[in-house]
Length: 166
Length: 390
Image (cartoon, rainbow over all chains, first blue to last red; front, side, top):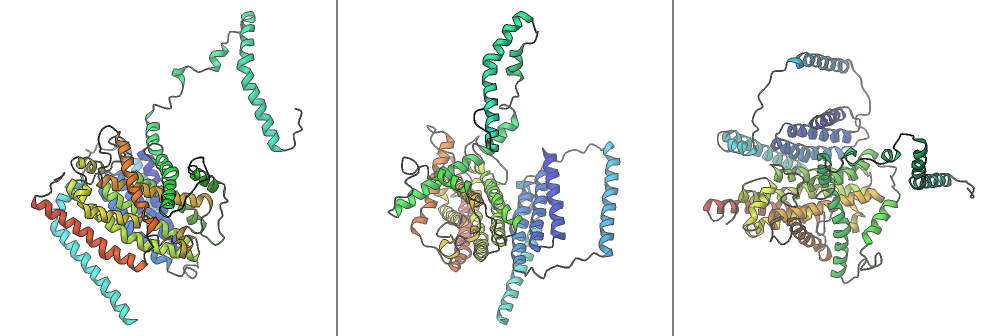
C-alpha cells in the first residue's frame, strides 16, 4: 500500500515539476508547481512527519501556490513564451541529469543486496517539536519572527511608495 | 421469432430473451432430466455440485479487511452518507425552511407529501442534461474542477468524527489539517473562474479568492482557544475533553468567530459574493452545466455538512450526549441544528459589499479571534480555566 502511494506521489511530484518547467501555458506551470509541492507534502506523510507535511501544504499549496496562480492570471498570456528555443546547454543539461540518474540507479542496484539493518528512529511528535521551539530553540524562533516582520514591513512600505507615485 | 428483427435494440432484446429462458429452464428441466438419465447410463459427473458452490469455497468478500475500510470510507461515515444527507435531506430542508420563512410554499408536487422527492427529481434532471463544454474554455482545468471540488470537500469530511468508533481519519494534527485542506478551495475557485474564460466566472473567482483567503485565517485562529483548553490538536481528543462542559460555554467568542468565518468560507448569504446571482449570473460556476454543475454543488454542500459537523465537534461536544441515543445520532442531531443555523441567514439577510466583507474579515474577525486566544491563555494562567474544563 505504501509502495503504491509512494510511486503515485513520485509521479505527481516529478510530473508536476516537469509541467512547471516545460509548460507553454504559464497557468499550467503554476498548477504543476502546486501539484509538485503537494507531492513533497505526501512524502512527509509517508515519512511519518504529519506536522511538517501539514505545514508544507498550508504554506506552499495554500498560500504560495495561490499567490503564484493569482499573479500569473493577471499576466497577458498571448505574448508569453511563445517561441520555442532549444539550445546546446539544454541538451547538455538533460544528458547530465540522465547520466546522474543512471549512475545512481547502478549504485543503488549494487548496494541493495547488502543493506545494513538501520535501527528505526523513534518518531518525534509535534509536542516535542513545540517544547524544543519554546525552550532551547527560542532564539531561532525570535530571529525568524524578526525577519518575517521586517519583510512584512518592507512589503507594506514598498506598496505605499508605489501608491503615492500614482 | 414472430416479430422481424429490424433494429440493433431488437437484436439485443432477442438475445437477452433467449438467455433468460435458458437460465430459467436449465435448472427446472435440464438438471432433472440429466439425473433421470444418470440412473440409466451412469455418467459419473455430479452436475448439481458443479452448478452450485460450496459456502467455504466462495470468495469471502464481506469479512476481509480492505472491504471493511472501503465501506467506512465510501459508505457510512464517509462520502455516500454525507452526500445523501446533504442532497436528499439538507437541500430539501433548506428550500422548505426558506419558503416558510418567506411565506411561500416551496417544492410541492414531486412526491406525495410536501414535495419530499423534489431532490430526486432535480438529481435526475441534472444527470440527463447535456454536458456543454463552451468553445473558449480551457478544457483540462475546466473539467477537473468538479472532481477537485468534490474531492477536497470529501477530504474535509474525513476529519469529522461521528462517534467514538465511527470515524474516518484521526490524525494527530487534525486542527492544522483543517487549515491545510481549506487552503485548496481558493485554488479550485480561482482556476474555475480562469478556465471558464468568461467575465462573470472570472470576477466570481477573484472575489472567491479574496473572501476565502481572508476568512480561513480567523476560522483556524478561532479554534486555538479550544486547542489551548483541550491541550491537543487531535480532534477526537478535543471531543473527549468536552465531557464536562461544552466549549461553546467556555469559548463563546471563538464559537461566534468560527461560525461567521464558516459562513464566509461556504459562500453563503450574506457572504455569497462569489456566486451573487443578481450580479454575476452564478459567479464562478456560471459555465457549468448538467452533472458538472451538480458535482460542484455537491462539493459545496458536503463542505457545508463538514463545517457544520466541525462546529458541533469543537463547540457542542460532538457525539457526547445521554446514552439513550447512540453517539452517532447525537452527532447528527447537533450537526443538523448547526446546519439549520447556517441556512437561516439566507432567508432574511442582504448581501454585504465587498469592502465591508474584507474589512470585517481582517479588521474584526481576526482581532476577535486573537482576543479570544489571549483571554483564554490569560484565564488559564490565572487558574480560572484548566485544561479539560472549569
